[in-house]
Image (tube, rainbow, N blue to C red):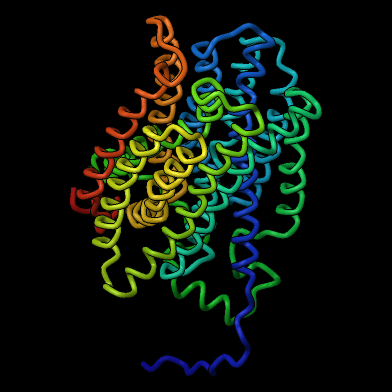
Length: 440
C-alpha cells in the first residue's frame, strides 16, 4: 500500500535548536566558573586557616567524589522524568552551595559544603547530553558537542581572573556569594523557555521538527529499563571510562592546582597567576570547539566517524604530552603557560569524539550511561587532586622548594597522556549496549 503523499514544506526551518544550544553553552560556562573558582582561592583559604596543600586536597576531592557518585542517578533521573525540571533543580542546588562555600567556618565544614556542591553539579552534563540527543541530528551533533565543551573551558578560563579580581575587591568569602548569582538567573530563564521534546516547543515549526526527528534516534516517552548486565560487560564502556579518567587526571591539574603552582613555583602574583591560568584554560576552549568541527569535517570526508575519532584522538593526545614537557622546561612564566595552553588545547580536542562515542554506545540510555562513564573520569580527577598537593608536600619535606618542588610532577602527567593516546587506538563504539544485550 502506498504511503500518502506529503506536500513539500515551503517555510524555512526555525532555529529553536540553536536557542537550546545557547542555553546549554551558558549552563556549562557557569558550571565551570563555579567549579573552578576555588582553585584561585586556595592560597587565601590556606593562609586564613593555617592549612597546607595536603589539607586542601581533601577539599578538592570531596567535590570530585560526590560528583562521581551522583552522576548515574542524576542522569537516570533526567532520562526518566525529563531534563527541564532536573536541570533547573540542579543549578539552583549548586548555586546555593557556591554561596555557602564562602560561609564555611573551617576545614570540616568546607569539605562538607564542597561534597554537597559536587552532588548538585553531577547531573549537569548527563542531562545536557540527553538534550543534545533529542534536539540535534547526528551529523550536526559534533559541532554542538564542541560548542558545549568549549563553553566549559571558557567558563574555566574566566574563573581564575574573575575570582582573583573578586577576591581582591571583596575577599574570598563574598567572592563565592557573588559567583552564585549567574546560576540562579539561568535556572529561572531555562525553566520558563525550554521544553524537553522539540515537538512541544512553541518556537519549533514543522520543518525544524522534521529536520530534528529525521536525524535523531531517541524516541520521546520511552524510558526502558537499563540493561546493566550488558552495560557492565561491554568492554568499550570501561575503555571510554578509562580514557576520560586519564583526561581528567590531566585537566584537573589546570582546573585546581595550576594557579597555586604559578604562585609558589613560578613566583607569580595573584592577578598574574589568574591571567596565566586563564590563558591555559582558553587553550582548552579553542581545543574543544575546534575538535568538534574537525571530527565533523573528517567524518564527512571519509564517511567513517569511528576510524576518524580513533586516529585523530591518538595523534592529538600524543602531541599534548610532548608540548607539556616543553612548557615545563621553559623559564619564563608566560612562555611556559603558552606551551601548556597548546598542550591542553590538543588534549581536549578529543572531548567531542568522546561524547559522540558515548552517544553511539548508549542509545536510549544516554543520561545514565553518560553519567556512568563520566563518573569514572572523576576517579582520575580525584587522583590528580590528591597527587599534585601531596607530591608538593612530599618534595618540600625533602628540602625542595620552588620549581624543584613542583616541576617533576609534569613527567607523571605527560606519562598519563601517553597512556591515554594509546587507549584511543582501541576505541570502537559501533556495537551499542543494546546490541551487546541481544548478543549475550
